Image (cartoon, rainbow, N blue to C red; front, side, top):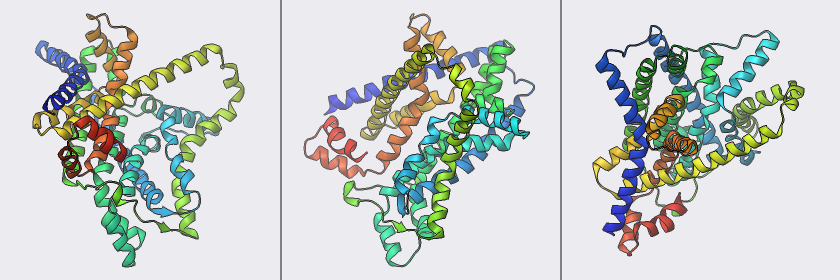
Length: 426
């Protein structure tokens, strides 16, 4: 048992080290710039910081409300089309924010409407990132608080009061994790903020690095980005620890459902269909308006590039998922405080903008002569490790430690507990 746990902890430490290595390189470059006196904030740096913070707060508020509301409606209410609308909430994840912004700007220019500024940026980012909150909150709403919600129904308490007084407090950890993931997407977004003329740290990093030829300035802005994401991760962790609720597994069943009829059902359908309809409908509308132009661009080279991209995406998803599982299970089975801190910091790769992460990996991988594919998969896995780990952590938080103690008391080792207890409940 001890040797098995030792291997698990060792694997988690190795994964965390590889995930944090680019961060260490970034910090080293920043300290080098400070020691040489070359590190300084660009003239428009304060404007970029302010733009990023405003975009972050606005997107978190709007996306959090949309994701939580639809999570509750589609998990605990019954109305026509609910099953299909629940699937539709995942569609915005297939549409990058820069694509939605580009099609909006183009359609707006044809109609004589100016699509630009912070308000449009908040709408675009919220509509393309709210599924993070939806996915984590709807799972929490589905499983947690079944007995409490049944008591509410027996006392004649409606769905709104049950949501506000029972379900929402119990789902706060999952909602907080989703909002933290949304915030990381916002901080790292480049294409959409450029198209909508929003000053942001991500745009400033690339401008300092590629246009002005000032890598030290780019590193300085990246460190500020790192601090913002650290605050997001730390807040999500504290929220989860203060609002922990456990589920005893499948015995709890699903939460009760409220039947919605008449105008209530229509309102629920509208709330659930509008966000994915806008997110996917606007690019499709643009595609129909420009079909001839798109048809001329469909070449065998494009098909080959698409297949290569899908292959890289599948490989990175597998690597990030396995790494996140090892980190989450190691943190659950080990009582060491240092290991919990290490696994928490392992998600910091998501804080580094893609361009800066690529530069850091090139600097690290150059002496080792690593192939570009290895560096690319390393970077992808590092960027999206936090996404996988956040969902797994939120799910494991609902499983009582009593389940682990009972399983180990029956002589099961951690791989068997993972396979026979954790994975079926996750």
